[in-house]
Amino acid sequence: MGQKIAEGAPDEVRANPRVIKAYLGETRASTNGGRRG
Image (cartoon, rainbow, N blue to C red):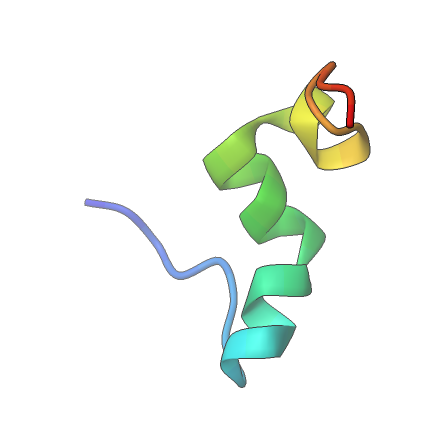
């Protein structure tokens, strides 16, 4: 099964680079996904 990659308050977990990379991918973690606006 999977493993825990972050722990803490919801705001801390959402801002964690490992969480962002795991859910959105490395490219989207550093950009807005190519969207404008």
